[in-house]
Image (cartoon, rainbow over all chains, first blue to last red):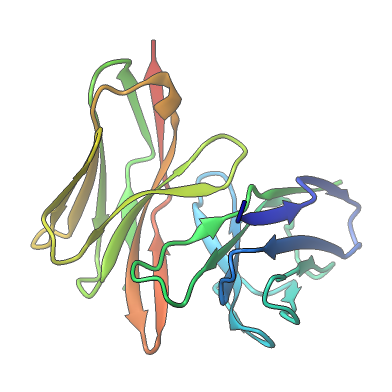
Length: 114
Length: 113
């Protein structure tokens, strides 16, 4: 079945460590997105990529980095520069041919900094 | 500026109708969406409406769009306990050649048996 897979589902990190969250899709979608979700704050866009080897900063990119070397994969690195990294992270994708622009989401990764 | 607002909580009894409201500020939106998020999971598109439509019905779901007042609502008929979730309103804006999504904060729907 086609879909988006995020891993790991739960991750614990010590302060000062970088951590990479995986996002893989087999929907043949061109665009991929990373969102951060905090209680009561809705979804905030971290980075997005419209095509392989290209990506743009979203609204809260500081302390994060991404790469888009393959169409299927859009990993997110939470660096030690991110001041408050504990959150629920959501990856999404959309097809460039989609009339409605529907986003397909993964199940999320919950990062806790100890 | 671009903003989407929703009430944060709604509580209904099983079998009643639920109405979740959303207001937005940018009149150039192309599509408006309702996404559903169950606990600990990602979001799924529940329904959407094109900005030149007033109403869309899909089984138990009815979406009403009032462009003059920039108001969107989602009505769930015969609400079930399985409908308990967070419901996000979002609008799609064209930004150059790209589409930009503006999200509401989400309405947490609690369905009481």
